[in-house]
Figure 1 (tube, rainbow, N blue to C red):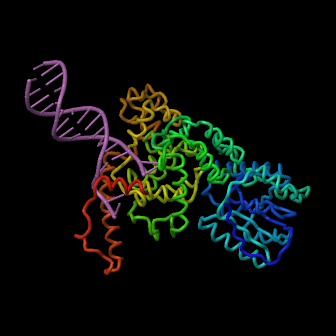
Figure 2 (cartoon, rainbow, N blue to C red; figure 1 turned 30 degrees about the horizontal axis):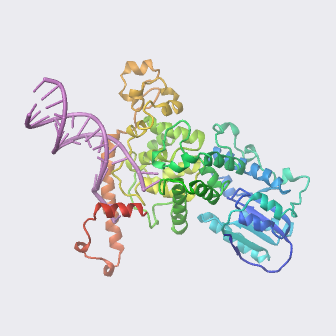
Figure 3 (spheres, rainbow, N blue to C red; figure 1 turned 120 degrees about the horizontal axis):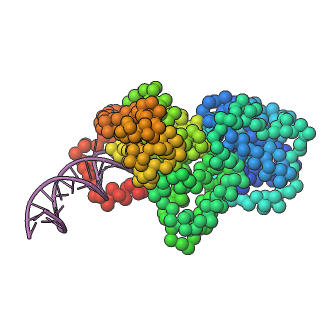
Length: 505
DNA sequence: TAGCACGTTGGCTTT
DNA sequence: TAAAGCCAACGTGCT
């Protein structure tokens, strides 16, 4: 069901001149705010604003820029099928929306609610400005599924007034218009846009057995062909509706035996929901300090190590292959994210998860604010997950699903002649073998920047200390009246209870 | 002494 | 809230 909020309605007209402001939600299917926009409208201006806050920021990598622009091109194409056009505008949203409302004599503004902190502030400012101008604001905070064809049938009467200079004034820019270069992009494995999103979803939905038996922990982090759907970039930009996918899955499940949350595909959607929810209501969710759910851990700083991790030069082929795939292709498997995140933080390098979060924010096509912060806290055992003695081995973990190291050889071709025995630890190969393989460790490929066995033990000890200090600090800030005597607390619980508690999360 | 049963150790680890 | 628990390799002692 669509729950729309009409924020202000200063005067009533039977017909509206409407701006629908696209931000996320770059799609026509399951888009109630857009549907609202074309209801009762004589003129509709679908607008996307290239906010300098994003354009100037170096925090968005080239591959995600390409994905976004492709999504806009596709959105414009799909709008054309409805006799509509997209207007792409550069500038600060509060200024541009105000200008366009005046220029086009707009009396209704529609958009989809966005819960990220920057968006919340931005939207509040925009709303105040247009309300003062007597523009009705409609925000949709919950949705029903809408079929595009039904939308067309119901609303064939409205159109976008187009000037002959539309492309020049409001066309989707090319990467070069944003002073970014196509040649910096990696291979185009995941084209942006709603059309591709729906195609990709349908391709997976057809695999009934695969959907019904899907269990995330059993998928491979290092297969050459992705072992999961790679719908995440499309969900991040809203090229695909999360609810549409959820319902499609439910249709497949219906009447059949199927896997369950948290490991099923439905489970993955619920994890997304979980992080969005906690991210929306937790202050400073993307930082350690001032974040009520985050353990305070005295991370170190080592610029060289951070650079080595960021640029795939740690000397651990499994880690470096993952970081190479991330930079080149913009997507890595969830468990691969675990492996490199653990390595950067509590496992090996003892560097703050906030640094890793920044790198992922730049390089991931699916970089999603809430999920990124939440998962970094998870992996660094700063929140949600606390079993910090479970450290991923940069050597053993990948071997389970790729004993021959094909994944490593693909992304680190310098090691392609290494035998399977040494592919995860090439520094152990005899020098003669290194020479025969054409890759001498320390010369053609880095030596390991840390000794995993050593730092792992040191870091686990540091985590113990950090947890103890964190607990002490938290107890110190509690009011004494609420403090329970320690001997009244249950010392332990039965395995059954523990299990139940874990799975109820 | 091979072969087996069983205890110990070490390594690893999504939800 | 939070130093567990699984598994496989290895060791030991017995027949």
